[in-house]
Each structure stands twice: as structure tokens, then as C-alpha cells.
Length: 140
Image 1 (spheres, rainbow, N blue to C red):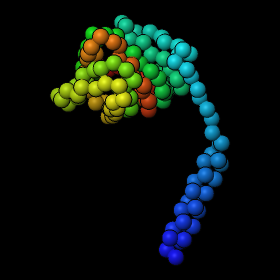
Image 2: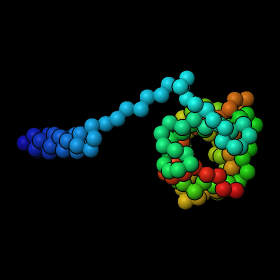
Image 3: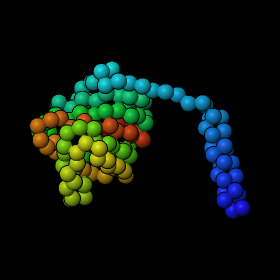
Image 4: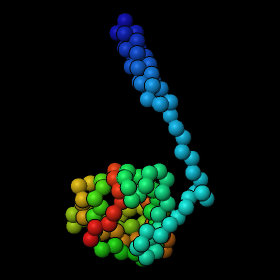
């Protein structure tokens, strides 16, 4: 009997969540193949970005960022909190005095203007997918 009650409650919760999601707008799809990405210079030599959604200069955005082989960033931070997934390449990310060796599939999140340094390791560029909660900037 408890199992039937659990199933009924679970079904109700699923139905409520589904109805809420439907009422919020019915969804939207953004599909961009890698060949459709529009890479643009960022103002930092060799560093390019490809925006997926939003506007990097104006507010929250999602984008790919590519660092060239051998790049070592100066210590810096970003005003916006951001969440990063490594797509390809390898870096050493230094945060709080600790080195983190990261490669494809790795994730990191930097919030509250956390200072950091990134060093591209190996013989291929480092490509990141970034979700920024506000405009993208680099503060030294």
C-alpha cells in the first residue's frame, strides 16, 4: 500500500513539473554545429571567442574561448561569475596558490572575482565552453 501511495505522489510531482515547464514557454532550441561557430578576436593576441547565446559585452552569455599553444595568462579575474568546461587541450589552472592540471571534460567555476592564472600545456590549443552570469571582462 505504501508503494502505491509513493507511486501516486511521484506521478503527481512529475505531472506538476511537466505542467510548469510547459506553462513557462514550451521550450526553445539553439543548435549550432562546430562548423557554424563564428570565431572572433578578443583583443588578447591569439585568443578567440565564439558566442553561442547572449552578448559577451552586455550581459549573461554562453561562448567558446580558445587559447593558443603556450599561452600563459597574467594573474587576472572576471567581474562575472563563470562556469567552465574544458573541450580540448590541457591547462594548468592556478587558483589560490594551488595548481590544477585540467584536460578535456574538466570543469571549474570561478565566482566572486576569484583571481587565477591559466597556462596552456602540450601541443594543442585549449578550448573552453563558458557560461558567464554577466558581461565578460578581464581585470588584471
